[in-house]
Length: 71
Image (cartoon, rainbow, N blue to C red; front, side, top):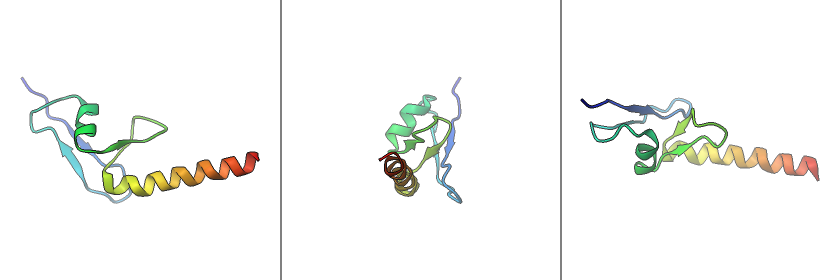
């Protein structure tokens, strides 16, 4: 028996998906193989490489703003 796994990008309006095609049901392995990224605050959200650029920039800006507020 095999499990079908489909992972959808959580980027706003993105329709990119990963389908395991019967290979592996290990979500983390599929994400790494396809060069996707986990949300840095939770493993609930996953982003394709294209959306990750925007998401990472937003997280970096928030972190930088917090550092400036604490300075």
